[in-house]
Length: 114
Image 1: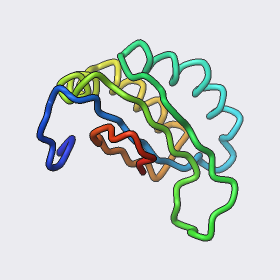
Image 2: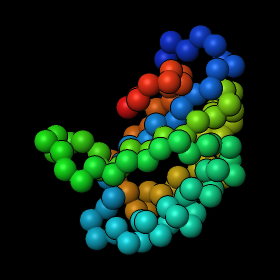
Image 3: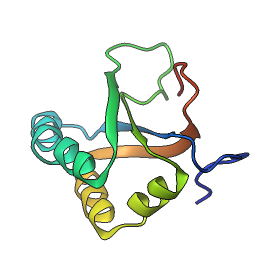
C-alpha cells in the first residue's frame, strides 16, 4: 500500500482517513466496539482522532456510511502505526462489524479532506 502519493515532507502531520459501512444487523455491537475498544486503541497507538461522521442520507448509494479521521505526527509515525501488531489486531476486530472499508493517508492541509 502506498501510504501517501506525492508526499514531499515526511515531517508534516498526516491524516488517516477511513471509510466504511456498518454490517447489517450489527449497529449496536459496532457502536459498543468503537466506544470501548476502537477509539481508545487508536489513541494509545498515537492517532489523534479529529473527526467522525455518520451519513444518514445520501444521493450516492455507494457512499460510505461512516468516515473517520485521525492525525499522526508525521509519515514515519503513520507507517509505524499501520504496520504494528496492535493496529492489525484492532483493524481485524473492526472488520467483524464493518464492510466496504477503505483508508488513505494524506498531508494535513487545514481543509476538509475526504
